[in-house]
Length: 82
Image (tube, rainbow, N blue to C red):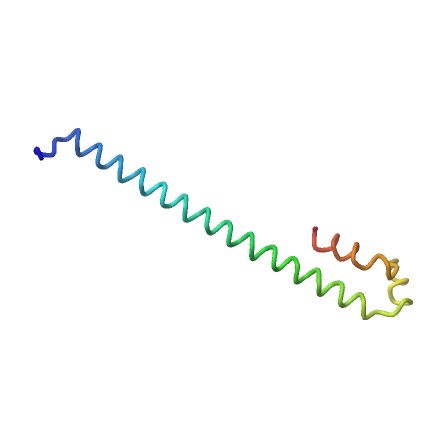
């Protein structure tokens, strides 16, 4: 193996930079996927809480809000952003 010349040093540096950039991009992609899973779970939980709360209301209370009992799931989906 010969001496490391400035041009070979630049090649190694470029290779290391590219490898580091790929590693960082992979890490960010995994983090994004994890955040999407967490966001989906939180949205589902909020949806279930909303359905549960509206389901405990009387027909009169729902009517005061302009919601029919049959509309509870639709209203909950809209509230959460599904």
